[in-house]
Image (cartoon, rainbow, N blue to C red):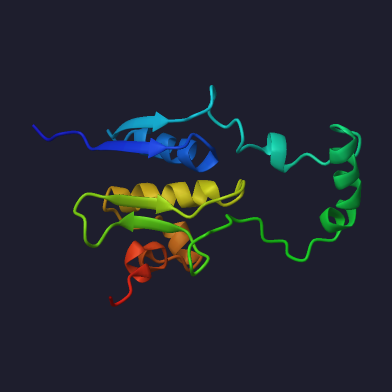
Length: 155
C-alpha cells in the first residue's frame, strides 16, 4: 500500500487556500492548513485589496485614502502579482536541494490575488513531482524560475 503524501501549509490566505484545494482535488494528498486567524482569508482577500472608499475608516485613514487617490487611478504599473521579499524579487516554490523532503513555498507578501491561483497550480505540480501545467509553461514559466536552488551561493 502506498502512503498518501502529507502536506502542511502555513497560512490560509489566497495562496495557501488555493494550494490546499489543488492538492486535495482528486490528487489523494492529505493536507493540513494552519491559519493564525479565526477564519482563513481574513487578511488576504479582495475585502482589503479591492476596496477604495474615501469615506471608510477614521479621520486619519480617510485622509490617507484621499491622498492616495491619484496613485490608484493612475498606477505606475498594471502588474498585480505577488510582492516578494527574496533577493531576486521572485516567488520560491520547490524542493530544497539540500534537505530531502523539505518543500519551499515562500516569498509572497501582500495580497497577490491575481497571481496566487497560478502559483498554487504550479506549486501543486512541483510538490507532486509532476510537470508544470501546459498553460503555465506556454506563458514561459519554468521550474528553475521558482526553484530555491537559484538562491544558493557559494559559501
